[in-house]
Length: 429
Image (cartoon, one colour):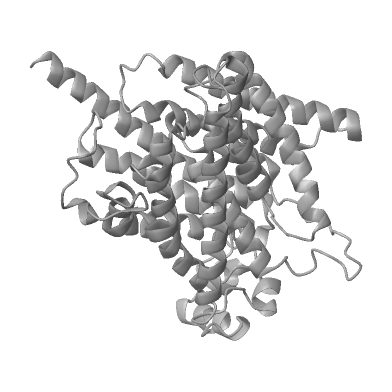
């Protein structure tokens, strides 16, 4: 075995394990969202995550990867690599094509899961399945091509190491568009515009979800080196930890002194906001900058949450404040604090300008394409659940089960099906 073969093998193991850590984040998304929503919609959350993984993986394999990393046409889109076939010799990565695809597929699944939380408890399940196709086959791959696949933003020099803009800001603004189109949950806002409190069903469950996301983020950020021997891995890991801790600490202290209690959902989302904020610059900024980025991410998340509520935009899990707002800040922060090219490190204004331009392009692309896409999907199937389905709960309405059952007896299968059909709203729409 040659040294080159050994190095390639180690890199492959590193990237595969990192991809597995990112995939484990789907468990984090599932538990976080299930804990934040009402109990009657928990199974629906889990089923949407399974749909993200299954349909998203297949669509990215067939179409998305080619559009994102295929041979560039005009800086806008790739045209080779569908089903991992065709000319992909332009890709300069230290691992095999299959290994690289696996890592990128895990990223793709994360993008659609961001949108899932913003439309929780009221999106039509069939409409959501169609939107998965749109996001994983078109919206994310084309936006990703601009910044990561050799497109026009990468040629300008945009720096987004692991996806504050490409994944989180794009996904977060897509989530915002979806939340606006579908509208708030029934009863969330009174006729006078007062926000009703929707109590989380299980905050410990949501906390475990956040811990899984935090764990997976080390694969998300450090794994983006694509090499186990990259000397930046340790630094990427520590700034990831510092930013997350800073975001959580700031929200903990802010809610403690402002409201005389530490608000658990805010601290959970503050930590996640810190993770999102550092994702773009984890390989480019120092420790002190990471702490500052995380702190600002937590505060911006709190402000954005209030902004949504004042405008009666219902986001049950805080997808827009956590991912979009923190992702925007993290992208801009690279232009300010990057050790090579940052405004505050003597690099001038160019990088900051490129970051702002790229960020604007990506969030507009995600928002507009989601808006158009859901309007078109609405001509095929209603994008929102009916009032009856929402009242009954999406678990029963779409999946025929509850999250847990108290009965210890076996049920007559045919009788159970008849009872379910009698009690369920019309499902043929």
